[in-house]
Image: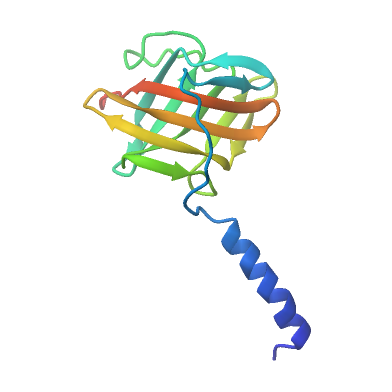
Length: 158
C-alpha cells in the first residue's frame, strides 16, 4: 500500500527520470571548423577517423576519431594508444541528442579509462558509400570537451 510519503517521493523521481532520458532538442552549438577541443586534458583536432564494420549495424556506425593521420580501412593500424574519441554515428540523417543510449566516449590512454559523455549532440549531415559526415558537440568535463565538424571513412566488411 502506498503511503502519502511514498507518492510524494515517487512523483519527483519519475519526473527526474524522464528529464534524464534521450529527449529531443538540446540547443547545443557546434563549431563550424574541424572537430576539436580537449581529450584527456590534451589539445585535440580531428585528423582521421573510420568506422568499424564489425561493430556497426543498420542503426549506427561505430566510429573512432583520432588526432593523428593514418591509413584507415587498410589494416586498422590506427593510433589507438593515443587520446581519441569513440561513438555511435546514427545512420539516420539529422540531430541526435546524447543520453544513455547515444553518447560519445573520451578515451584517456594515461589510465586506460573510457569517459562517457551523455551531454551533447551529434548531427549527421551526409552518408555516402564511403564516408559519413556531420557535427558533434560533446562534454564530459573541462578536460574532455569537443565541438566541430567531422568526416570519417566507412570501412567495408573485411
